[in-house]
Image (cartoon, rainbow, N blue to C red; front, side, top):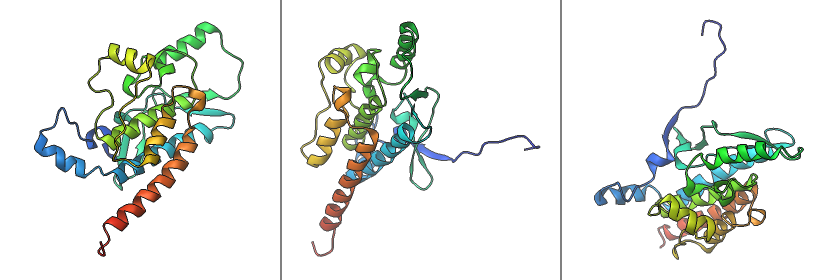
Length: 230
């Protein structure tokens, strides 16, 4: 405008927070219609697109470095008018070189503590919560929690206070319950994402590959069940 540089951004129609049911805040007669809008296949598709976004940020933008979002939660997941998922709000993001001289202890601790006090503990990897060293696989943990939130249509650990969450989840390794109605592949994927040992967690790229295969299998099964011949 008037010769000044401008940045055009895609419009987001809504966010994951607004789209997902809120069992403790929504009248029971409204919950059923909201849950029908979130079948498992949609949860998997959204999870896949988040994983693909993280895979790009961790592996592709800049040679020799990752971009860590550092604030993954439903408030920062949006949907465009065509239904595609978008990751936004990079206010806490940080460029993370893959191989650099280790910073001074006070600088390293400061950068990690900033993250430990940012975002929601429900989705935060234990090492981030505790201000310990972390890498891009901390965001795979957050992806696993988001995946559970969408599949269960309920917030993880919603009944816990921060103190209870720290004791039971961060220190004792408690994880959300896996529904017996979910495919075995989904249960195994979630567990591989929120593995307490960060070095044994999947990368975002590996999670995206497994989600792609799982989504295809669920779509095929759903099509077979809804076929007119059945």
